[in-house]
Image 1: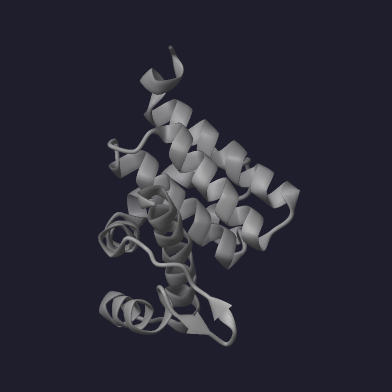
Image 2: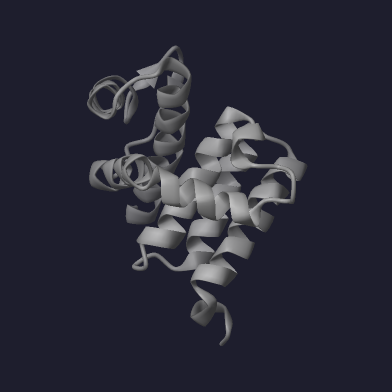
Length: 151
């Protein structure tokens, strides 16, 4: 159950980051909106799963707080000539959230974070885009968490 609530928190965090970028909403507004109206609620016939709120806040707040470092790390990992700013907004949100966990949440195994964000990408995109998320986050993880992959 805890893993399911963390997965839902990751999905909600990506949606919140996406909305923040498009609507230019602030952190407190996004927390209030998602925690009041989205997480664990039915919206327009879609049921949003309960999520671990503290984890949701950790991801969204962590991405906002560390965005320069995160964007630089993702930029260095993306293919030459494709800076993060050229990536579609929802894909940017997924990569930023995944990179945050890899860079700042050492308590979460890298392979778990990668798989979770590949799954999030799969909810919105086809296999090629989900594969891109896998490739970028895997390459980043192998740089910043090399010890987890050397065993």
